[in-house]
Image (cartoon, rainbow, N blue to C red):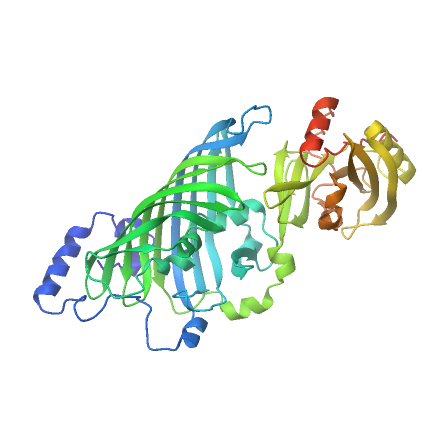
Length: 505
């Protein structure tokens, strides 16, 4: 059962049905009187004589290769549906490959109080994705190859050391399984060959990157062992939540324990997941195959340690923020990580700010038709356009100012109060422009009751927005008139739909 490190990149080193050779070794061991499980309990492979405080401070360093293959259907909310469970679907197929080193600090039992964290350096992180007939490719950007995961408010949060991650990058490096928590599969007490135990809900949630497991369990059985290795079988069904969205998971697989190194060295899982459609993001029904190979190493090749990078982390900027980058729209900005992309035409986009699975605010990002170089719209003209666009919904202006953004763009910001079906609504309109004639509008809307919690989200986005090209590679599409009845219904249901403001001067 021993793996050759020289074949670390070869997943065939650990075939699922390799138990024949294992059984032979187990029989030889038993016959020679050195049976591993008799008188020498097979408990946590990480156990030693250190105190709990010393164990809490200890870290492990591993090299990891992970391959995830997915097929199934993504479920898209149907806004015209009369039933809550009515949705549109599209086929999905994806494959991600990750290769990284990981130094992590994790509790070996629930009795330990450990500030859990992991430092990962990626040599490979890529995704091939096909939704319907639309293929996409993603690679982790070079400035984001160093990742740190820390426990924040009882949950693991992921950040890049040097640059805010995009939402897609964060999803890629988090994946469906947490390798720093693989040792949670190990038993907490002495067992014998054939014994089974269950993974409790807290450990299952950590392992599967869920916020909570509400029902169900994962059963683990020791099916083979010798002095060096052990083999586990896993099987379970559970229900849980992630970002306040319900999900059902059924899994089955095998794992190998390297007893001398104190780690789960190999894992293969077949997983089925049915995630609900929510107001904020699509659901899916998928079948996935996960293969993970790990080995212990002495140090991180980056030359840094987990403790060192923890001291470098700017938690506010790295963990709480995401980068949005539009290639066709030729702009990018940094925003609170609770903003999600609701609609993206390539040039323009609609974002929603989500709190506890509820839409609190909405933002329309609209590329305007270029003006002549050096020509700008006045603040008075901008206010006039806003009032005309809002029409009967307009009540009064609250603020209006001009400034230069931190990226050197001219920024006009107008705050307006109005009503939609007797509900008080606040709009924030921001127009950003450069001397070459590029104009881009950010239009925010929210119920007045949400203004305090919204804070300065608009300024965070606008002040960091930059044009990646002086001129758009494609012309912005003409705006289509909105259906007034549909717009009012959508505004009353969540946040008011922002008006699209087109400069006329």
